[in-house]
Image 1 (tube, rainbow, N blue to C red):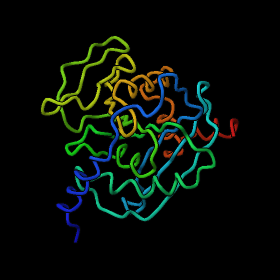
Image 2 (cartoon, rainbow, N blue to C red):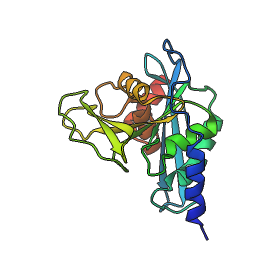
Image 3 (cartoon, one colour):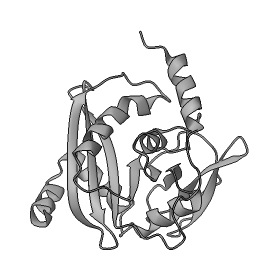
Image 4 (spheres, rainbow, N blue to C red):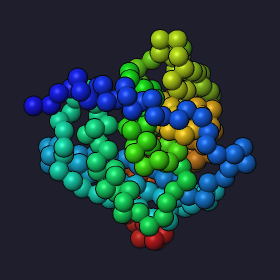
Length: 225
């Protein structure tokens, strides 16, 4: 039987390990930026993680890895990171290249206990991470303008936990939060540097496409790798 109280307490404790400021200098330029995405197969019994590594600033795909493992935990709201991180770690361990920054499809500190998958993964692998989510998990914000680049702070109980960014016109905004070893401002900056006309930044767009086995991505990968 799963003791959810124990897992929630673990989140609260590990959230104290999250570094919420930049661990790199103002002149930092990453050589490689990765995107990470997790999905499920076979009615949720198999967890599939994909990590795509892109060279910066070209944003060209230089490596990707996929890991599939037996799902370790059923879906429990607020505890998704425990369900997802084992497959992400398995994919991470297969990488030949080590990215300087990882964008994770999911929440960072924009989580009720300030410990979403981007924070959980970042703490485990000790790398700067950014949460790039397609929907809001917690917090409130005023409506985001329709102009590309418009943004609003995401606030929860008086604390700014992220930024809501209009990354593409006529699309729902992204919910960006720091994961680990990076500030909110830098998290937004690097997401914007990786947007090339699509809603998602290139690292998570690639990871999502690879994880989904989309024909376009497979054809492009055959040309690039």
